[in-house]
Length: 126
Image (cartoon, rainbow, N blue to C red; front, side, top):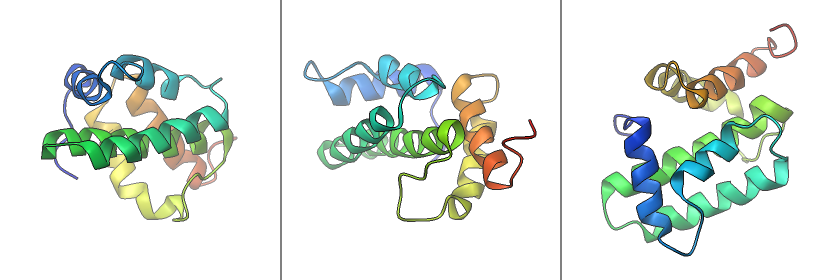
């Protein structure tokens, strides 16, 4: 995946992809970052991200949709211990570590760090 955009840029790109038919990028990211969001809602956002990736007309928009996809998977794992993917979370730890650093100081970065912590068995300790 390419260099992560700023959070504002990510919100803008996702909102452009969603158009008027879906929620804004800001709402999608806020929902993902909320620890109380149910797994089924996160699964729905993951599926939305897959649709957005297919309809994206630029690499920048595709990357934003891909980031949303990974954020939904990381959130389900971080907040609920549920892996929404057929791939192990541990396979994504390097990516999640990079994204955690890229979004340091933001709830999005925290959820990627929490997913890593849980994959290492630290989720219940912290």
